[in-house]
Amino acid sequence: MTTDEQLAQMRQEEEELRFRAFDAETALALGLTLIEEARRTNKKVTVDITRKGHRLFLHAMEGTSPENEDWIRRKNNTVGRFVKSSWHTALQLRSENKTLSEDFGLSDNEFVLAGGAFPLMLAGEGLIGTVTVSGLPDQEDHDLVTSGIRRFLSESQNQ
Image 1: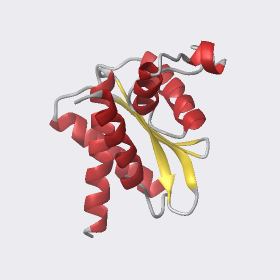
Image 2: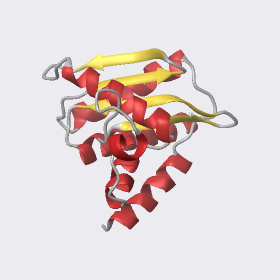
Image 3: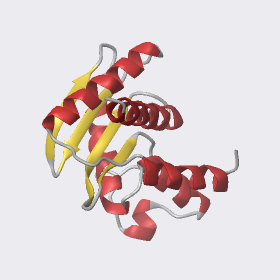
């Protein structure tokens, strides 16, 4: 898949993977879905769900490290700044030969071009937070978070 095709796919994901409502119970259920998805595929990750600056879910699986939480913080900052998934931003900026520090004046200590953070979008409100996975290579972090959100939304709509 070309970079342009990947970027188009990510724009589509960001349009489709939105919530009609999102509270602490939704965060718990979604977080557990993401952990179950990681276990099913034998992956070790840390999962974070934050709404309006309030962390509603955090779980670090055995085999992860505190460093994953720093990656999560930086990925979340990237989503908040660009209002798209962190992997979408990373691929887009790389394709344009841009960097966070030189082109946007953003510190590598606070922002990162890495996959795994996805915008938590609420119908009628827009960006209200992030759903983030850390512990795998960029594309795998992104794929795990999007497949988990897709599964959660599909199952919750069928109830």
